[in-house]
Image (tube, rainbow, N blue to C red; front, side):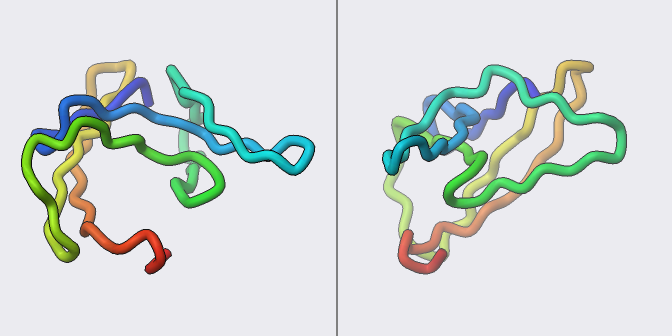
Length: 88
């Protein structure tokens, strides 16, 4: 996985949350390598997509399309539902 894009946002990047010495920080992940058949979970406190510079208002319940971009040129379209951060 080398990136992502969405028509609803100017920029989409992959980040990872890291806890160190009681502090949580995020770092960009330029490439996420997975072996064939391996999976990774995107979840709070771990890997996640940063959706930045929203183009139009989004309300809870809206569907947000995202396309995941892979090194071999393959693309995977997914749809996320906008939810309250407290819903996680």
